[in-house]
Every structure is written in structure tokens, then in C-alpha cells.
Image 1: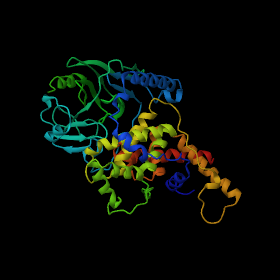
Image 2: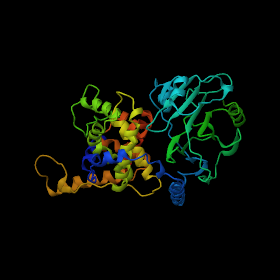
Image 3: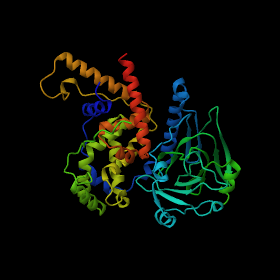
Image 4: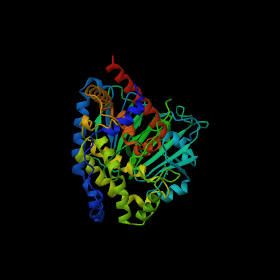
Length: 256
Length: 201
């Protein structure tokens, strides 16, 4: 048998693709149109959510996929999807924390603040972040603040990180709230600085959130450890660490 | 770990030492400055790759077309934030892939790729015997069925071969860390081998 990778490359040449439309021809007119954010209105979002729930329901009805999708729940603009196992990236040693965890490029705090259109805050109890990372559009702006492990702030897993605070713009959609808890749920609704939030412990998670356009976006928890996630103003904020719930809520209370 | 195969380009252009067409940098700079004509040339250049990317993700011609149209407009508007000198192709594919995944989300339709008809297969050299052709077609069908049956994450990363993307470009396009691309690719290949092994008894 020929090498599988070579066979896949060859197969790619033989796939039946539809004819590529002439995108360039209609481009000028489309570029002249105003931004099309109104496409993602609330009604459309609600329909998408309904379709999504039905799709998930259908998947849960199938025994082989039931285990793969333990459940979903939502916090305002955030949907969290729990899965029983998640392949944490095992990148080559020597990669920086930012590369290992997919945090974007390393910047200084003032640089990050000068770039993102929102105020960056962090738990004052942790002190100034040891490192700051930035992901920029075409996706979402995402700021990640990192604190290295130290006394009182143990390393989370084998990540080399004590705590992460990640701040991403997330649209508040109080009607976009899904709750489908699985049998081995390790999550709990909590109040974070008077905002509704969730405490998630014990298992790694992937999740979706809604960006300011109302478009669902996908993300993963970086440390696969304990996570506190909540909506603060226009942002979805999360703290990931090995700390317990009370300690993390204590940190969140010092956000500034 | 298996070595990465060479990544030939769908877009056969003259390349600079960094592997990008020499004039691309200039076009990108002009487009960043608002040059619609330059941007149209870039879109023209990457239309097929973008459309195929979207088609592999959505499995639907209409969805792939919508995703590309939306992505090309969004990319133009985001060009101001494009880092000068960065590779344009995976950056554009990232926007296309994101739009395509958004199109696909909410649909539980299975992506079911198919092959061009046998008499169009590029076998090269002398015409093969009907038996050999049937055998080759069956082998390809088996492989494609195995790819189609992969779970979404594995299928996406395996599509890297169809699009002839490097693992670095795949990482950018899917917004996964490169280490994740490599580990998922390795897993996807293992699963394909398992499935093909099963079919061959």
C-alpha cells in the first residue's frame, strides 16, 4: 500500500468539486455595501439556537455519540460543551507557553490595551501579569494574562502556568441560554461580582461563545483545569487555574 | 512520527524565498491601502483554494459559495489589521474556514465528498486496463469513504492533504496551535489506517 499521506495527496486531485464561482466579478459591488452585521439579528440567532438544540438532541439520541456529547449549558453568550476526553496539545518541548496553549503573540500589557477596543482588567490579588498574549482579528480580539506558578498559585496540570485570565468580547444574549446538563456534571452556577457565571471543575472543556456580531465562535479552555467563567460588561471573562472555587471567586472579586 | 509530505501549491506562481509569490506582497500592500483592483486579483488567485476549503468544510456548494462571498468581504475590511509581510494565503483561509464552519454549524448534514468519474482519473502514461482502473477506483473510493466517516475534527485536519496545505498553514487556517494540528493529524491518520485495514481484512 502506498504511503497513506501520499495517497491522500493524490486523492485530493480526484475529488469532485463544484465549479468555482467567479467571486472577483461581483466583489466590487459587495465591497461597496455597508457592513452586514444586521444579518445576525436576534431572531436569526434564536432560530440558529433552536436548530442547534435539535441537532444536539438528535446526536444525544444515538448511543455512540451520547458519550461524546455529555451535555451543553450556556451563560448568556456562552455555550459550553462538555466532552469526556480532550486531546490536550502536546507540542514539541521548547515551544513557548503562548505557542503551546495557542494564546497568540506575546505583547506588553500597555500594547495589548492600546490594541483592543475594551478595558483590560485582572484580579489585583494576583498582581501584575507575568506575561500578556494577544490574538487579533480576523477572529476575535482575545487578551490572555498569564501568571507563572508560585507559592499559593500551583501549576495547573503540566502547563507551566499558574493562572490564566482570558478576556474576549462576547455579546450578552439573555434569551440565548441553553441548559442540558449531563449525568457527571462538575459545574455550578455562581454569582461573580453580581454577574451570573459558572464554576467548572475537574474536566477539560471546549465551548462556544457569541461574538459581538452574534456569530457563534469556538474556543477551548487552555489549561483544562478549574475554570470560572462569567460575562462582565461586554466581555466574557474566564479564570483558569488549579485553584478551588472559593479561591477563584476571591480572585474574581478583585478584578479591576 | 511520520515526516510531513511536501506541500505542493494549488496556485503555481513564482515564489520568493519565503515561499510566496513575489508580487503577492505588493498586491496585499495595495489592497491594504484600499486598492479594490489589487484585492480582486488576490481573490481571483485564491478563489479556487478558498472555495474548495469551504466546500470540504460545509459539503455544500451553496454554503461554500455563501461562506466565500462573506469571507472575501470580511477579509477586505480586516486588511487594515493584517500584519504586513505575514503570509496572506493562510490568513485568508482562516477567514474562509471560519465562515464555512459558521455556515455548517446548525446543520447536521454529513459531508459526503465524491470522486470524479473514473475516465477522468489522472492515471498518466498508457491507458490502464479496465480491471486495473476498477481496482484503482475502488481503492480511492475506500479511502474517501474512510475520510468521509472520520469525525469532524479528524476530517478537517485530513483535508490538509486535499488542499495541499503545510501544517503551519493548517494551524493558521483552523486557528489551532501547530502542535494540536500535528497531534490531531497523527490521530486522524491512525484512524484511517485502522479503517482501511479493516476493509482489507
